Amino acid sequence: MNVTYHTQTVDNVEVFYREAGPADAPNILLLHGFPSSSHMFRDLIPIIGKDYHIVAPDLPGFGNTIAPSRDNFTYTFDHLSEIIDEFTVRLGLNRFAMYVFDYGAPVGFRIARKHPEKITAIITQNGNAYNEGLGNKWSARKDYWDHPTLEKRNSYRNAFAPETIRDQYLTGAKPHAVSPDGYTLDIGYMSRPGNAEIQLDLIFDYQTNVNLYPEFQNYSRTYQPALLAVWGKNDRSFIPAGAKAFKKDVPNAEIHLLDTGHFALETHADEIGERILDFLKRPI
Image (cartoon, rainbow, N blue to C red; front, side, top):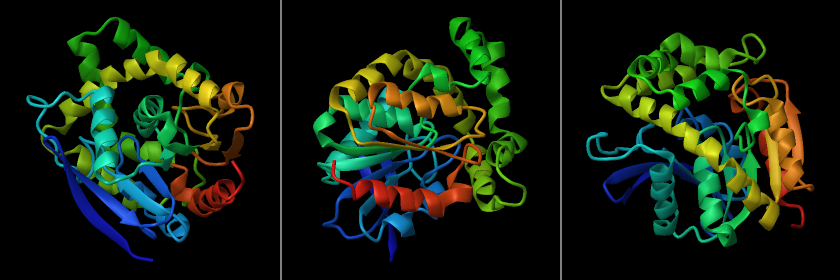
């Protein structure tokens, strides 16, 4: 199966995306998280792309998507979701399932709230929408949101340090199970000039996602999307309670906790891919 690589201009953003699978097959939109890009789906795409049309964009500020500087572009999750929403329109994705991970979750759930008729299913892999899923680190981040200072903003620059990115990949995974390719590429992306300030803007704006959790939950409760949660249970950022919480609003949600960390695809792409294929083939 061939994967092809493209760009689609939306406003002043040149959105890079990977595409695979039959063009006339049901669509799956893959939305990556921090500090990654669509490269994180490199092992998953060949598994699910045999039966589905796959589109995996890089969000503005990430990967190979070319976006304006923060002087001319507002880096907020609202704005990112607007770009990706219009991106799906321009590609003619009128109906699609979503795979949401980390930052991709608040982007995806914003789109789902706006266009519930377009969403055929949601696969969430450590893509949080509940306060229960927030790990211990979020208390410090809430203090920053409530009492923002330049000193606190600058303290989050360590999130882009090579050792922090590497730790995000390795923590919770079995020893020697994670290839260095993913985190090495992310380290390169995060070190580009001007990118740190963009990422700091998004870290501060993440509070809008938490504030929208009740709205995301209302979407789930109202529309009862077919929902599969495949979650690295050793994730320190988004803990397993976040996966289990989906059942409060979608009782038929299918939940699987995997013995790995935040970047579960690095170690469990085969299992996640097979679970997705099995899940999407069931009657909805």
